[in-house]
Length: 446
Image (cartoon, rainbow, N blue to C red):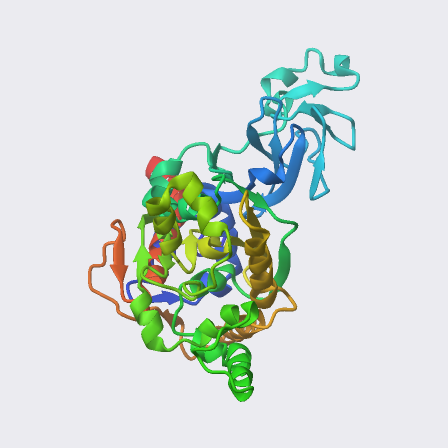
């Protein structure tokens, strides 16, 4: 047992108003506690229901370090089960996706389970007669996670049996998901292909923080976006000339500080927030022929204009996903160790919208987030340098002080200067809350 285990005061002391201790990024014990407490008590993204469109379809992933299966049950509802047999612990499903029919079958001893996890059959079941198997969890079948909520196709789960409700956890932050879904004339999204996957040798929270860090693009991305902009100028083009889609995507990364200051940042309780309150790097994309007309037919002209006028940049849903509504993208940051994170970048098709929108989304994902991308490597370089630098003993604290205010209230919604680090402080406020929730309860019981 280390100094932080079962010690909520020590965990909470790692976060103070203007700074956080380096252990939140580099300490393996903190990582293990995040898996046990934070990712159990928060609502965590699992997948999109379009990944399991038919009864028996499943998708395997993880919540924190817990392997889970998202499956469409015979009643057409989405279930989320721990991916292990209750008998010997064997993983039930090893393929990323598939269709299991009406039941799962363990490959080790052929125990079988309905797609809601209930025990269906055991070979030679008479060998368990009189042993009390039916009174044990093993005898009930595969264990379901604590709670599941499907919000407009996006499936979230809370591992803990009891805790904060879905609506209380997300509150008004769901407006970003609403805007992304409403951009479909049919009010529905579909996952478009498998995600781009990219391994990062750094702590997962570095990636989450970076989503609302607006003081780095014009610096860190000068080597990529800056080079592209300079080539554009060298070819004789000006800012007023029409840009091809690739330049529309990459050029805004070199916007000046004033652009990002004026764009604004909104924060919500429980660690959620977004950049791009007033405008964003997605604001000036070229119109796609026929798209506005399709939206108008569904919503009417006034609402169609309102939907498209929202150009939020990055919305962080704490703890570990980011969505871009205008570009229909979701990135999930999967923690594998204190210094190892797998990033999966999904794109979505707006059902009944012109195919050109999906083409632009796919181009954005390849250019910005792929292992072969232009821009993503800039960020990765910074994360890995920070992961190494935090081991230096000269200083133990990391600064998150930009536009700090005394007695900040993270239980209220706020809109502030677009370069504030309030959203980072908001995330760490939520980090302490969900890291220590059941530790504090246990301590009180004792």
